[in-house]
Length: 98
Length: 135
Image (cartoon, rainbow over all chains, first blue to last red; front, side, top):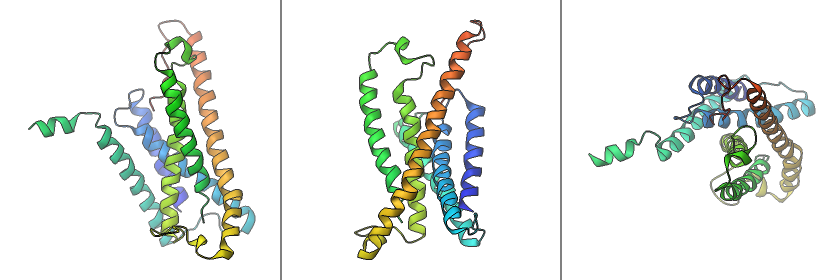
């Protein structure tokens, strides 16, 4: 389930990046690449596990869904930290001057 | 178990390479950055973001499943001697394909950007736009 949710997050982030491209002031490109990287790695993991074990491709339970949402949240936290540190709007300078 | 350590290793290497390439590119004129105006350090930046993003989120998943812990030796598979072998086998069978697939997708991205830029360059001047990817 976390693969599906991360792929969905990657698609949404990519669409948002495309809407704002070529300017990428809020680093939506970074957000989409974070999610795409994880999606690709989990896709390989799921395909290999499916070929080896022939089990369920997607784990559809509460635990897997909760993990999916945690992964999305964690990706957003990483992106927000990078955004705050790089501060493209120069907010910190303005706030600290007050 | 520890499959994400292989892409993590690649990410460390590509991050160092990006820094070195970035330093070398300083002072290089735009004509030498190819058709796109996108420098190699920027292209390597896409790969780094893919790799580090994947590694960070997979790290969270491994913590969730109790395969990574915040105390030494950090990987639960390394606690028991019998599990070290399977862990290395998993790194080889899962981690290496992960790193290869991510790198292959990045290579496709770079080729796509190059081809789009080339196609745009062939257009009349007023329609041509620089393809920078915005990433």
